[in-house]
Amino acid sequence: FEQGIQILSEQIQYSLIQEEKIQKEVKIIFQEISQNEDSPQRYLNKIVRNYLFRDHSIGHPILGTKESLSKLTREYFVNFIKKYYYPGNYTFLVAGNVNPEHAKEIFDKYFKERVDREKNIREKEPIPTGHEREIQEKRNINQLQMNIASPIRFPDSRERTCLELFSFMIGSGASSPLSEEIRDKRGLVYTIESFFQQYTDNGLFVIYAGTNAENYKEIIKTSFEIIEVSKKKKELLEKAKKMRLGRLSLLFENPWEIIWNAAYKTTLFGKPQGYQEISEAIKDITIEDI
Image 1: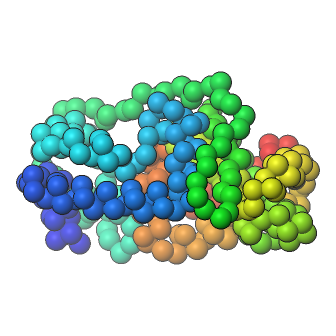
Image 2: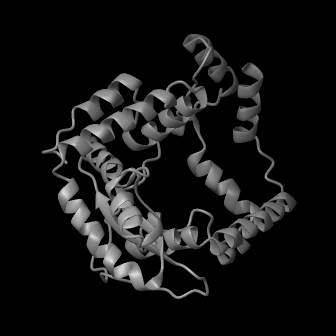
C-alpha cells in the first residue's frame, strides 16, 4: 500500500514530462481517434454531443483532435500541472483492507507540499439552445445508427435519480418496453437501448438504435409513444428499482467499483455516497416523481 502511494506521489508531483515521450503518446492517441472514427456508434456519440453542447466543454471530444494534439508542447503540460495538480485540488480515496488513519498518515508522508490554494472549481456553463430537431450525416456503412438525445440541466440530485431510473424503466435489458415493442414485436432494429450520462451540472439522455434507413421515423414515433405510456407505470418503476438496487449491491462487493463510484460521486456532488445513501435515494422515488 505504501509503495503504491509513493509511486503515485512521484508520478503526480515529480514527472519529468520528456518531450520524446509526449510525441510517442500523441501518436498512440492518433490511433485511438482513428479507432473511434471507425466505430459507427462511437462516431455517432461524438457528433451528437458536439452538436447538442457545441462550444460547451462537454461538446469537445475527450481525446482531442489530431490538429490540437499536434500543437502540444512540454511547456503546455508543465503549465497544466501547475494549474490543476496541487493538494487543494486532490481528493484521496481508498477502499478495502486498510485503516483510514494509516491511509491518511501515508498520504501526508508523500504529499508534503501543502500549497495554500483553494480547490479549482470549473464555472458552470449554459447549455446551448436553438437546435434543429433533426440532423443527419451520411457515411458509407450498411446500417443506420441513430440517437434520440436530449441535454438536461439538473437542479438537484433527486432529478438525476429519477432520470436514471426512467432509463432503466424503458430501455435496460431484453425485456424493456423499447426492446420488446420495437425489436421483438415489430422487428425494426437489431439493437435498441436507453442510457443516461451524468456530468457535474447537466446530463444527456439518449435512446440509441441500430436499424435500416427506412425504419428510423417509425422508431422515433414509437419511442415517444413508449415514453408517454411507460412514465405512468408503477410496475415498471418497481422493476427498475430492483434492477438498480441489484447492480448497486454487486458494485459494493468490489473494491475497484467502490473506489470508482466514490470518485465519480465526489466529482458530481463534492463527496462520496455510501450504499445506504444511494439505495435510500432510489427507494424514495415515486411514479409521480418520474
